[in-house]
Amino acid sequence: MKKPLSIPHLAASSAAAIALALGLLAGCDGSAAEPPPADTAQTPDERPADAVDPDGAVPDAGPDVTPVPALIDAPVVPNVFADLQQPSEGLAFDGLGGLYVSRGAEILRLSPDGASESVGTLPPVPDGAGAGATGMAVGPDGALYVARYDAGRIDRLPLDGGAATVFLDDAGHPNALTFAADGALWFTDSGSGGQADGAVVRVPPQGTPQRVVDGVTYANGIALDEARGFVWFASTSPGSLHRAPLAADGAVGAPELVSDDDALAVADGLALAPDGAVLIAAFAQGAIYAWTSDGLRLVVHDPDQGRLLGVASLALASGPGFAPTSVFATSLLSPTLFQASVLEEP
Image (cartoon, rainbow, N blue to C red; front, side, top):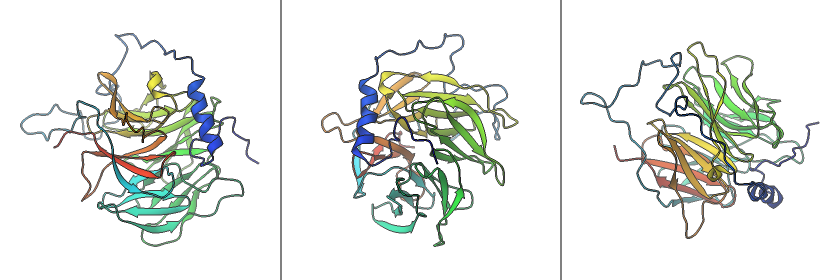
């Protein structure tokens, strides 16, 4: 029997779970940790000497280098991309013109015009567990991998019409997923919510899961920046952004706190921008922030309507038909799939 959580997972659809999550914000004292000393603080553009970089050092943009799209200068208001009929979590692009989201145990494929079709249903979960997904990622085999937080497992759904199966059982409380260039699956295990027993986990191809970062309180969003040599992850309780260096031999170094600004209260999903900025879903603020070389700043908000309250998963657009400048976002307090242009036009 799984140990009950002391703080329910934010993806649970019950009003009680969401109320507790927002109550966590109300209970914060508003204090923030002192920033690291100027001589030791790093920015997203810096990287350790032994960091993984298969293509060599990242050059500055010049006449013979394609410019890397950067974040826009001013915050934008999101657009409604689609009505999902119920709150949702988990987003993944296949790079071929498809965007995948969850509707309970059902997986939908959305086309660039917003039309949707069902591509499969995930295997049943134990009685009392939430049926929905938390994180999603398309693997190198072209299948969709889905974190089932309450069920403690990761499922695999072939996108060619095959039946979904359980890929990894006994995965703790898997939350967000991503894949590395070598085919390894990385995910966050949220642990017991308010306890520092969460982790960042790496699953090598045909290998055994490895807890590469341990002692994380409510690990949530994850993003890999292999070019610069970092794994980024969010802590939801009460809300902060962290990163750990990736070494050339595949080892993961000691993690560091990057920001615990009040704006990140109940931080959720992450997405990595091409220039190394990290987008962060600020669940309790109803906004999307970005950590850049200049620090934390607001990039998406809706001050008049507050429609982004409960923002959960983020994904930058990929594939034909989708605007490459866009970020997509789900909300656990709204059935709406949002879209916002956050990158400069190429």
